[in-house]
Length: 322
Image (cartoon, rainbow, N blue to C red; front, side, top):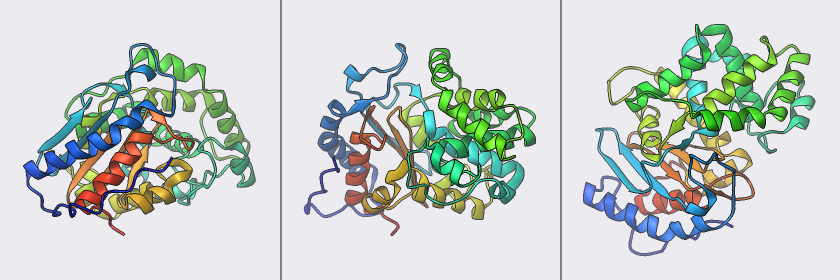
């Protein structure tokens, strides 16, 4: 089901809306999107994390000056899942730069994020870093380039958020139990010589990263460096050179929401990365990081209410870059 179109009136808020305007817009968007949190399929979550019955919904916006605007369940924890691929990619680019793309592509897949068929046709060369095979390849690169591949990503996320990123052990156990297809991808890439470490070692890094606990608020905060030319606005520390930050944004825009990236670009017009726990994290360059979260998913694996909320937010605040 596509998000409901934004209303023709009132007119979109100014790109320089003040805090009261932003709070009002978030409240309106939440009110119009929240009902979708009660529809769609929900990826099974550990008991300690929000359940399908909870109909959770949250929306957060983090400005570059540190001001945060939130509504709903913005401080409820959940497993980061595929959104962590943005931070894994960033960590790999910090260590090896664009040499990374000798082993992983930069094109949309047009296929499900866990497709083995495409990986075989392309001789073990993943189409982009945001499908599962590409993320496994990034973890393999991190095992080569970092002293501790897991800490390279978890530490980066913690620095961007301003607090330690920790693994939920129950989520990790569930991830390990459902990793057969990821292992198959690893073995297929290994058969083509494009995976350098033991498959189980690579998959373990990946599932630990997917099991990091985040909130809607912290993901909006963590995305701000991509809106700020690669510089963490909280500390002023460079995370990526500006050209590489633009490349991460480009990949998020074209590949970040499974095989619905074209529709997201059409509806939202700014870079996003989604995950099957129901988060959709994005950034609007020069302005803020943003995240919507609601566990029920559409047929492509993206949050139904999250997609609708960000569509409405883009329309109301005139956020599209396109």
